Length: 266
Ligand SMILES: [Zn+2]
Image (tube, rainbow, N blue to C red; front, side, top):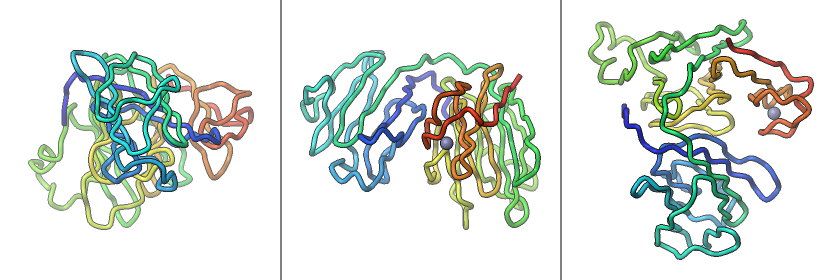
């Protein structure tokens, strides 16, 4: 677990069709492309993209972008020089073949109180305030999961040192950190389907921010910031979260949010 007060960026990837392909907070450095190794992975179908198309890095406290692609990255219509880090501002739009990236730097201050709203199958939701503590998701039975709190910064090594750890399997560890929630997914045998919003997650380190929805098998974990209001999309194939702006469309599937389920987390 890193506790570095590093640089974070919010990145939204929008297809030419207007569809949101990815949206999330990332710790810099960030690689973006359609390869397995990219931190932000774009769809394989965008064949004009390189496996690692570009990289965002920090130099001297400033955000830089480096084009590592074959088909190029443009900014304000001007193509970047390949392999040369270019200093960019705290809010930038970059154009890739078939995709636009909205990039916004975020402060390194710790997130305000984050709450998890947990739901298993059709059971009622349960609110789990983190209060700065870590949340560990254990496998339970064949398809179930159990949530337990641990001290902040909790890691797999800490877990291994716990009595009885050999008989339990950790599915996920969530740690509040500056910039959001660090999510660690250990590599395990026969893992359940794990998704962050629409993206399938592989073992390793990921980031979550308020309004994200993490599903681990039949367990649904929503990330909420205290006092902010969310609206759940009514599209049964979506059910993802949006900021409470009825009249607008779901940022994921485009459904109208007006009849959505609104959720206020105190
Ligand atoms: Zn939706």
